[in-house]
Length: 295
Image (tube, rainbow, N blue to C red; front, top):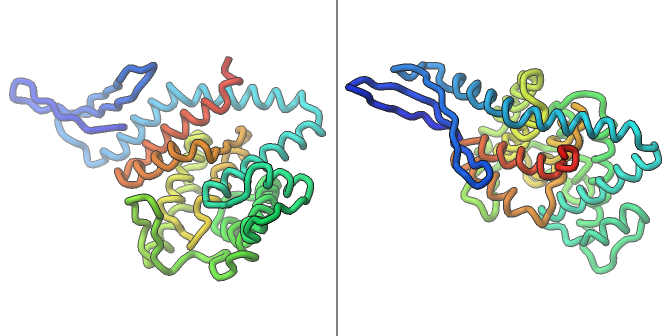
């Protein structure tokens, strides 16, 4: 987390940017001097400071993951690639829906999506949303265009048109709340402008940011806006993986069993208005998921 520090030496004032982080159980920090006055463009200086830290510590790691994963994929037979993607799809569909309250077990999900066997005594809504998520996931993989409000609305509509037609594919015009968090999403009159600004931000930053950083920031920004009456998490995680996949990076599944850390990172970032809290959590999770490419 970046903070502005003021020091006084012999009656003179000096300002520094300081980034504190934990590494191998120890608290460390990086610091840069910015002058005897706080510049008017301090936010730009902060972004550049953080970007340089990430470039040094994280981006080389992500590039290694991408390169080694790509080499592995090139050697893998097409039949196996298809099976591996199906396995990821099942796990991702199970976890992303389970995080949002689905009652289907992992076995239920696998039997439904791989063999067409409908689980007994489980909510019809959960079954239909699981099947719809598979459809949207594969559409996302095949989509050759870029992220836009049109494609996001399409994914949302297809995900919920059978179970929640009243909200499917529609930006909300009412207030929503998130159970279990102190964060309050933007009001109804703010949502339209925020979501349009989100896509302007993406169009601008997709040429600047590392794709893993872009995916993390897109997710936290999208979740903070909470543009839909329901399904924000599922669409947000599809957006995240679309960015990774489009840029040739392996996709990331956030497991249901690890939801507490995910929730905590989202809430802290939203409450403290510091997206870097979530970005750092995302970086660590991504590195841990693909540690095998780093050994």
